[in-house]
Structure formats: structure tokens, C-alpha cells
Image 1 (cartoon, rainbow, N blue to C red):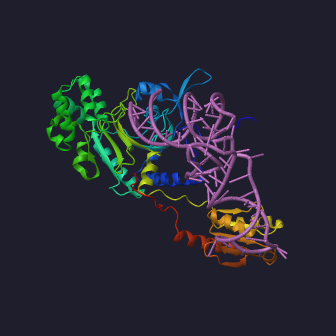
Image 2: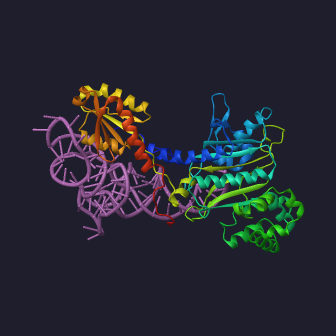
Length: 447
RNA sequence: GUGGGUGUAGCUCAGCUGGUAGAGCACUGGGUUGUGAUCCCAGGUGUCGCGGGUUCGAGCCCCGUCACUCACCCCA
């Protein structure tokens, strides 16, 4: 017997059957509306990029391990994009002369990374990217922070469900150099250590710090600085605070963010503000959103300095968050109305009735084969139809059809021309009461 | 790449100290011509993830392998 191919999708990727897709799109569309309400414009780009644009910058040695690469027939080395930032940098650089800055752009794209799948991390995910290009103003930070709050509000999340932890690499570096007296060349490795501060046990941290050349005293000083929260700012030199675009945020909208010296982020291109958003429920320990400010986004492509700030949020952690808090929308119904011919020679009339329902604005199906009426009614009701129109020989001979309310289970026989309006009334009433898109209950706080 | 857990019907799972595989749900058809829940009847070729080993005999024990999953590494 010949071997059959597996039906499971490639490791780390997901199929979105209609019910799953409906949920995903509902979540995304709420976010699109909010983002566009802030005046951001959507863009898109290719999934394939030259492999060099990742190897050069984003993650260095990691790019090699986690990049899906291929060689085209012309010998060019290409990669599936692992993130959107290099692509958008390329676009901005290529059109810098034509664009008006600040440019507010957003997108939603699938990105691939070759890594071992686990909770909150897959090999393919969809990611909304939001950026403001061409500004150094801290007002951009504030705008994005407010946008993040609006996005969570649109998803039905209250502020106790998540936390926006924010830092600034300018302040981070000042802390390391001015307070802990770390040598300039040690700033980056020590920053990486801070990035892992919450994951590693204390003795391991001390060990790694010693390995980086920090004295016991410096390690103590670092630990106390990281624990001091907002008080840390009082210890930093005024010069550093003057350069920080985070300080105005902390002054003007302190209630929207949590200053947190432990936030570093892995990517090299961040030069200022960095932030991550976390679920307050420990079931989801990974960041929901992450982003930051970059002073020179497009340096690979142009000598023109293009600063900006942006963030991304993926569709792997977000549904985990929504499910944990009972905020995941229900799948939306596929159809509003169904037309059922009651005899084999009534398919033609049924199709013309259906055209009338569609003209009345209803998503309408016509049965493709004749079956027991009871079974067919069950079937279309399960598909989400709120109304069925029965086209039977006797009614049809009189120029009438029967419009049945599948929820209330009562029905009226009306002239064919009335079928659309009658069905539309039932659907409007039905959707108004049991409106779709409400969160379904789920056990919150498990684990 | 490293480690743990799990792989039995479409789904959720049961299967005793080894004796040639089960339940519930779901699904399909029927219970006479045009009316849905419930009820009755009927419907499964499941390579027990795959390969090898031990045994008279393996879903069960042993080895390997693959997949899923959780964590590590790393990270949008």
C-alpha cells in the first residue's frame, strides 16, 4: 500500500479553518480599527527578502540559526522574513525622498523563524507592526503608549490584565557607566545579562557577572540599582535624563506605564525607549507586545538618518492572553439565510429566491442536494442561518414561499417579492439580540 | 541543539500483573410524499505514531525513531 502524506501542517505552522480564521480576523479587525483611528496607514511587502538584510543587522549569529533561507535560480540567497523591521526600513529608505515625515505606518504580516515550537512561540506567526518614522520627539512615545492602551481596551481587556514595562537604553547605559562603573565595552554584555535577570537564579547571575569582569561590589550595586524602580532616576546624571525620550513619558503619562530597569530587549537596533507588554496572569510569561526607539533604522540602505519608534504584537501570545482572560471572541456565523427547494425541479426557483435575499443584504446559501427537510433545517441552523426560505411546489405555484424563523420556529408564507425583506427583518432582530462577537466564557487564571 | 511528558476511532478518552480493541460524543442513512431538539434502527478496512526486539502470543515489556507538547537555549 502506498504511503499517504500527513495531514498535519508543517511543524510550528497552523491551519486556520473557518472557525479559527473567524476568531483571528475579529481580533485583528478590532486592532486595525483602533490603529487607523490614530491615523496610521497600512502597507505590505514581500515575504521573501535578501538574506543579507537579516545577517547584517538584526540578530547576527541567531539570524543564521533561526533564518529560513533558500537560493533562487539565479544563485541569490533569500530568506523568509523573520521580522518586518528590516523590510520596512528598506522601503522607507528607498522612498525617503517622496515621503512626508512623520510617517505613521502599520502592517500585519506572517513571519518565520526556525526554532523549536513551544507555548507562545511557533515557527510562523502573524504580527502587527506599528511604527512612526522620522521623529525624535517623545510625543511619539506617548502616542504609541496611548495607542497600546486603546488596542487593549478594544479587545475588552482591563488595565489589571496587562502591564506595559518600559525602559530607555540611554538610561540603561547611564546606569551601567555612571553608577555601576562598567567599562564601555562591557555595556552590551552586561545588558544581555540584565535581559535574563528574572530568569536566572541569583547564584547563576553572580557567576555570569563575575565572568564578565564585574567585581562583587559592582554586582551588588547593579542589583540594588535594578531593584530601585523610579528612585533610580534620581541617581542618574541630568545629562543622561535630558537625552532620554522616556523621561517625558514618565512625567506626562505616568499612569500608563511601569518604569522597569530590567527591560532591555534583544535587538541591537534599539537605541532609546524599549518596552514590552506582559500578561499579569503567570500562565503567559512571554511578552505580548515589544518595541522601541531606533535612532538610525535605515542605515543599511541609506546614509540618511531616519529615526523612529515602533512595536509589534504577534498572534501567538495574543490569543493565549485573550483566552486566559475569557476575551476570545466566538466564531462568527457563516451565513444569514438558507433557501431550501423541496423538490428536485425547484432548484431554479430556489436560486432566484436566493438572489432576492442577497439583494436584501443577506448572506444566503441554496441547498446543493435534496435531503430530508428536517435534516436540512438542522444543518443550516448549525451553519448559523437565522432564517430558512422553503420553496415548495404548492406555494411556488401561487407565487409564494415560506419564510421560517429558525430561532423562533414560526413561519409565514409570503409572496416571492416579500421574501427578502421578511427574511432580513428576522435576521436583523436575531443578530441584534444574540449579537456575535461576544467573549465566550473560559476558565480564567488556571495554572 | 538539550531534557521531561504524551502518542489507541473525526473528538475526549478507557483498555487489569502481556491473551488477536472498547465507551461516550460527533458524523451519515432510515423510521413512507413539505418542517429541526428527544426517541428508535442501521452504519467503523482504527496498519493501537512508525521500525525492530523479547515472547507460544505485544496496545501493554525492551531498544530505536518520528510527531505533538512543556521547559531550557534564544527571541519578533
